[in-house]
Image (cartoon, rainbow, N blue to C red):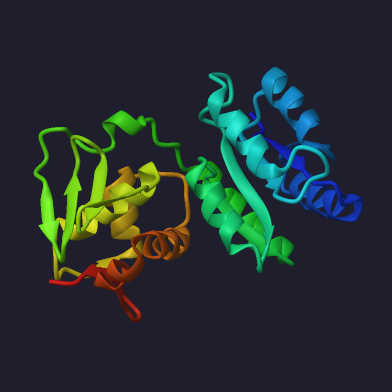
Length: 233
């Protein structure tokens, strides 16, 4: 059975270009120009993948992503955000809202198709936010930071830090093994489990967002060039 891809893009030339290449690859394709139309189609036809532009007229892509994840019918649908390179903040927000992956504009059709195939080969993770960290897991204290899994809480020098579910899991995973270096794929597998439908480069975006929220303490998440990341001992 053909995989169904929904394109949500207000620029007609991009819609037609992406649609042409997806149809050529054998996918079933539908395209709309607004977030409101996207929600209507997604609810009635349930796509396997939604290519969702961030900058849409009216309801923007981030709001559409949030609405899709909130609906039982579309909660598990893979969502790939289409975003300009300068919109790093939107990339982080999109991933935190439940986007599966992202592609920056301008993009090569070949690269886009490769990413689409990669996402559709994998199955979305079924774990809920409550299942992210076991309540029996130990509290981690390091560098003035207290990471409490049962409360899903992070405090730095006694001050609370608000993290998304994914950011919390990444921090807890790295801080639980100080000094160890993990590749991006190892971080994905450790945080989400095997076969999570997202590419490993999205880890870099999550790390950027996490460091910003941790402020000065963000320096304890170190980049190891050519390998990945570690939490400083």
